[in-house]
Image 1 (cartoon, one colour):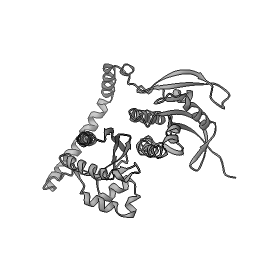
Image 2 (cartoon, one colour):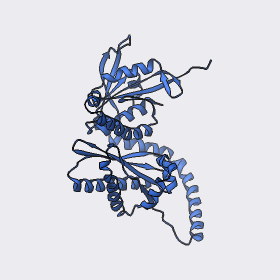
Image 3 (cartoon, rainbow, N blue to C red):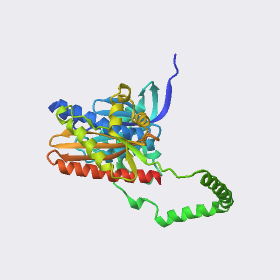
Image 4 (cartoon, rainbow, N blue to C red):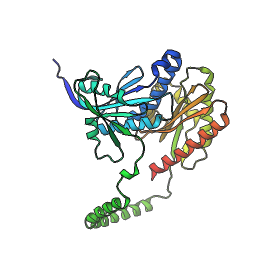
Length: 357
């Protein structure tokens, strides 16, 4: 008989408010919303070390190595979807003892997490007492009690909390206090660091002198970006022309930057046409293209608007960073092209300059 694998795990449940009614009225639209939700949320979940265990209709069951990672992931999800009416989410989080079996989990910890979720208002996050206690000391996370609540199928009432998603600067330590602590810490280690720095400086100077004498010219390698065709998730081929248009617009605009260079589109398209490349992840694809970054995205049509999602994958670290999540009127194409290219251009420059500094 195999040994039962028990562990303390942070469990996050999501559900999509009003999805049942959307499914009843327009099944095709509901399926497009689910597909769009996956594209938007899964990179965020991955960034916070979450493991998606189940997709139950419109909801996710996700495990995290810590309550802090789970809560920060939930906050980013809600902040990302706040202006998307079709993605009105409720999130419940609990940390407790669970039984793991392959890629699934069971136990009271899972049951409690699923019962907490309904106490979150649309767009909110609800926490159990154990999660609240785990995030104490996180100055950027504010939670307030909503009292003891009776959970369906659970005997004892549980104290629940909701996250305040607004920024609270007054909860942060005063700037003078932060500077004082940093200065005091530096002063304590200064005497030890001084002689270490002297030795290191000597080594660096010698190394640079050798490098200068043996190198005739300095070679500068720019950051490179491969732009992938945007995915049409509307299930309507009528809008396939947008895929090519997005590609051309961004390639033309980003070509103006001195901070990065664009991988030739013919090379990208040819590689994507290979069957193995189609199923490769963004990191592997980036390595095949010998590029630093992959810019990718998708679009969907919701009534009279085009919703565009753009993300950037760092090939070296595997980190995926949201760049753009915006609605545009279908009829106002000129504004859409200009805003899309300018916004993506500015954010990419900020990210790449930040990572290089």
